[in-house]
Length: 236
Image 1 (tube, rainbow, N blue to C red):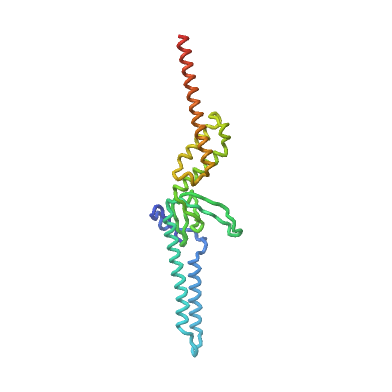
Image 2 (cartoon, helix red, strand yellow):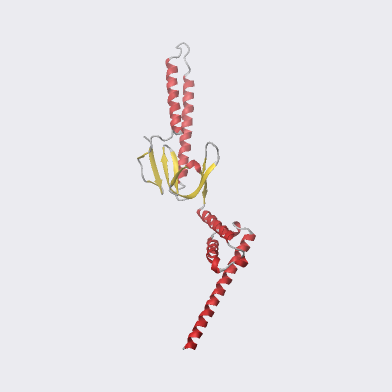
């Protein structure tokens, strides 16, 4: 029965959980089967060889050494993959799932790796509550860069929704204006690497327009307050 171990924050949290017995055969299992078949054939060949013309032991040793070498290389590659997976815990990754029959991308997932699990020698990463094969991880993204790109997407989406600068009003556009400007100000990286000169100019115009509208609204409120106070005094 296969064993499924989960590593979270560098610690094995369930060493000994049995995995499903219907788990797909791994390359290590296949190599073991081939090695066993080779040994069976080798024994049969030695048993039924012509005693007058025996097969050279050197040939047997050479063939067996090839299997051993492949096995060692495979184990080394597997250990490297498992170490690589463990290093991903807490990092932001991009996962691309591909339909094996068509070769087309079926989904692209981005998120932080919560933990890594191992089953039958294969590594799986847990992202957004779902488990994905390590082979499906196509990129490891810097958390700051990832956060910035999400903010940039928000800014661009809101820019598309806002009317022209001359037609912006606090009554209908205040929420989108504030969200867009807040997202823009939260970008920690160099904004010139995310936006074109034209886009930066447009954002600046919206910021000036927003400040102008807020100031006018404040003045109107003060005038209204003064008028109310004057009226109350006159009535008194």
